Image 1 (cartoon, helix red, strand yellow):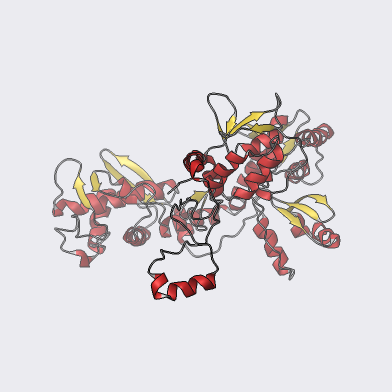
Image 2 (cartoon, rainbow, N blue to C red):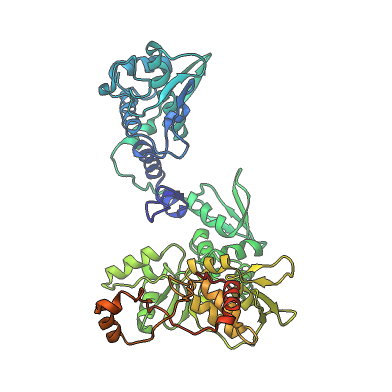
Length: 523
């Protein structure tokens, strides 16, 4: 796991990282990284685990630890390292001695007197520290709050990482630091000791047996493409069609799986022929129809460059299949590493993010297919065939909803507004409906469609002018308005943002009724 510090919205979240890189490190280096991640990081907060104390309002599970908690954790580790390794220490006596060395653990001196430090406003956390039953006095507070913090550290992360051993002596608890504590906390570099790992046996019945000692990195690789049978005495796996197909769907290839088996089996070992043939056949069957999601592709302008990359040992490990002379697949989660290779070779690759949906509505490029629906004035899409084109159905679902009465799709104001907010243009919607609806879009519904999608701009209202109007040029109007005698008799000028059209007086009420029926606001 690793912390995501990237884009807005995902900051502070945790996501899965490639475990193989971590478990390929020496055991000492892995332990040191875990130790420093806990010691200097804020993801773990011991104040959540004080044994007998309630903290109000207190931290939430995902809240980062306060800087005072991280600082106090480091002070406490100095006290643990000062003790002689292998010497058993009573927890209560260790807490009492720590109070003499670090009386202001967790609570800095400047935040008030010792009697008030556990109240809101008198500590850097702005929390109340209370006993689960009864009030917390300042005399017992250090042993329960700071002491509870020490217990949470020793009995939690330090014990989990194997840096201390713990034993119970009746109601008392004692602990001692292990020899590994000094190795993990020192600054010495971890050196690979050259452990002779046991080899992998690949049997003709598709069973895999990893002889002890087994490296964690090998187990991670086997977990990707084989089914685990047992890990009690020996690591035992089985290759199956389902496990290999699952691995291929996650980005592995039969060639990669076979290479892992050959390298793990040791020099001179030969993979059974039926296993090799089955891996190739299972991959062929799994790849008959492929849908790639989140794939990373490499495109070059010269096939010679791609030839060079596949010939380079470092770059070849980061590439998948070659799809064409100038196009290749990039191994999962290896785009950053491949980019580093390009930089070292003085290439500056362009990173292009493909659109989430390269659909008809998004692209505006319509394929030649016969009309699939008849569009009614109320927005209902009546299918013309018993089975409608599935690709077009997927597109029309983005701009319509299911009508419960008829079972057809229906275009509604809310669906059009939602589609436009997602980046689909009104022009693309209209052209799609004109293209795939028999007889196109009815004129009354086209008006509604433009009103819903903002096709008439900011002022779709219609204003009725019933006063007599003068039709004259702009120059004549300007002169008449400056004439004192005529200017007093003229009203306000009609703003020419739209078009004027004559309506006979006997038809005016019917026209207004029809306009309102189509969705216009008539003033």
